[in-house]
Amino acid sequence: MLIVFKRNRPYQIDPVLIFHKFKYADYFMKKDLIRCEFVTQGEELIPYHDEEWGKPVLDDNKLFEILSLGGQQAGISWLIVFKKREAYRKLFYKFNIKKVAAMSKDELEVILTDASIIRNSNKINSIVHNAKLVLEIIKESGSFTKYIWEFVNHKAIQNKYKHFHDIPATSILSDNMSADLKKRGFKFTGSIICYSFMQSAGLVNDHSVGCFRYKELIS
Image (cartoon, rainbow, N blue to C red; front, side, top):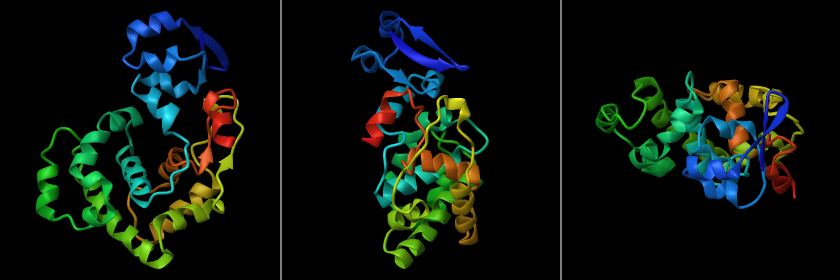
């Protein structure tokens, strides 16, 4: 049986039923696993949880992608943005920092007519705006990766939350990151967005201690 934590209590899901219901049933059928509760929000999040979320990212373009998509999430659910992730990648050169920073106003105007993404002009423009600032950081620090990981002294923080709902929305470190990014002129980089970014990029391991990924990431 698969066990998923919900409202302080684990509950069981019959993997046979999951096999018929979910497109990503193979992730459940491999073995009995305990996962973080957020995977119940949408089946698309299962492989994301198992393979990406919380895994340390040490690539400038990938870090930029995670931060950019986090900004698109402001005010809406992550699942909505996640479902549009491939569309964003296609429109923004797979989040190649240099290419995005060089995008023209005409390109952005065309992008804003594309229904495959969230057509919010402030959010869309912020991606290019922030890309230019990331280039300044790379020039200053050598890499965006180095700059980002300095906030955790280049070592992922291993938290020990028993239940997913116990995880805070912000931390002192996300406050510090947000303050520094805003000081540099970044947009859509509030503390909540920065903490979510830290979780996704693996700066903090916020998998519940009972989740199978928790031990994999600390080993």
